[in-house]
Figure 1 (cartoon, one colour):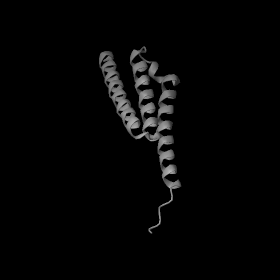
Figure 2 (cartoon, helix red, strand yellow):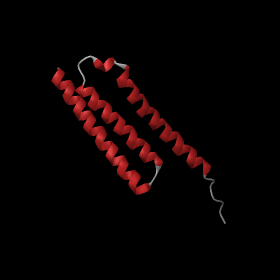
Figure 3 (cartoon, one colour):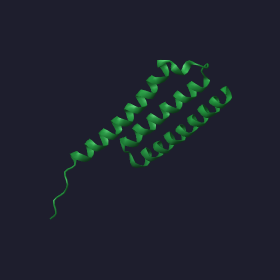
Figure 4 (cartoon, helix red, strand yellow):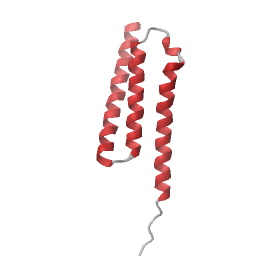
Length: 96
């Protein structure tokens, strides 16, 4: 069972790292903070999963593993709020 947990933690870390790299590529082409926030969030989640996979069994209940997850999710919320706020600041152009 322990090997399966380590395998799943590694797979999750790899997938979230790929997602972070994809969002980083989008940020480099569009220069939109939204993509940068998502890239950082997924990189935090990948690092958290790697540390979780390397930790001893039973350490998952530790608050140290919840804090990076909380930061990643808060960063996603900040990205969404920031994107919507910036969109609302631009007034629609009146037809000429």
